Image 1 (cartoon, rainbow, N blue to C red):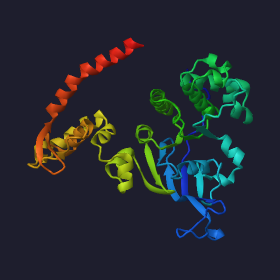
Image 2: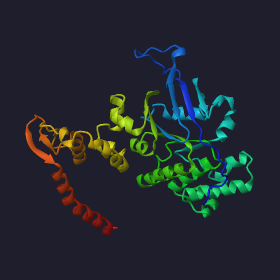
Image 3: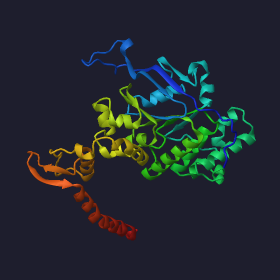
Image 4: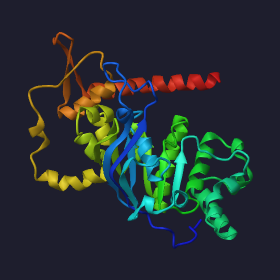
Length: 368
């Protein structure tokens, strides 16, 4: 289906400048390390601490970090569900406080983990709430909704259903339709796929990328799932304890982590993860420059990297790739060499185990 209204809103740049959010700590819980009560002016929790970054128009930026790091708080300050204690946020060159909060939110798509569909309203009414508030004509709203339902792969018949009649994955797709219904310039997504099973989560991630390719919105996406961040993001904001620790592309973050926290969070030592961020096209394009450099043989050394007997084969393959050699020394905890592992060993192990895995899977299916 062709997208209606060719004059759709362009994606907008988001700029955060020294954004800070403090929350008061409940009386009696604000204690110093020594156990004394803090004075009232110190009885606050610094949820977001002077964060500055720019999200380019049309890009998908992921806020990544452990629970409690401030990523959702930061997201909610963009649409003023939380008011910043200090700092400024611009959307498309307009400071967000220059608009009434309600008006601001009507022009920002918002998708949350719990979906938030109104249970007493049919899907058609759920997804057309914001266009109606904005005074859209009925024909324009219906055309937009039909286009978006087709875009997320849901049949028009679902518009007559209630949320309870849809699966979790289908409800999340409807939530995305509702967020995009009024054609917002930006889209905020707060762990939208966290409550969905792994198979549907991966499918929805792929659909989001395809939708983004077609609608080209500015998306700010919150997750604590590193794999999800790497799959979706153009750039990643890594947060910890309210602070922005690193901002860059997935490849930059995994190959040049800012510190040990980032390195551990994203698994920077995992060669397979690094390979997942590089496509085949880049290898073909790089061959010309490689031809003028030293051959791969120059990477070889007489010293073999070491691995332990209890290490798994994924770690073994990652270390083999990272070492530049063809073999690893297997050593016990005392450092005594007890053998070697090669690429040929891994290939043979996979080949011999594949039939057993398939046979086991077949047995499981026959038992159902």
